[in-house]
Length: 138
Image: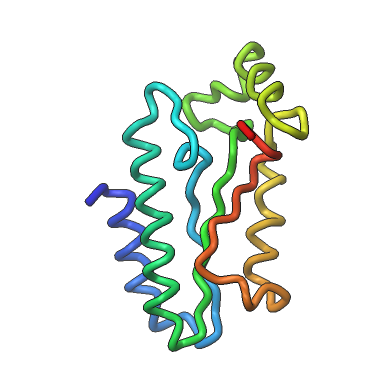
């Protein structure tokens, strides 16, 4: 089991006694679990494992009414990959051209989706992969 997947699994196990019945868990995946780019095989496979783990957690924690979902960001201007999306104008332009909303994502684009999944308004959303990518690679 990949160390990242192990970390999500074991951290969740440790925190379960602290999560109230009816609580929420949001795991983080990546658009790279849906589409393939050269050089990201291990990362994409690990994020795919997080998505499968999310569904199992949702099933296993259902009796406690704990909803478990996964957010999968697309390309975001961050330090990931040594800041390539943020700092490489050609890569940034390419990704923006492949995204329905015509730009690369910003860190603030992800927080609202996570907050929404944590709210009571979305208590019936469970075991879902929510891609937050602006429509990348449609």
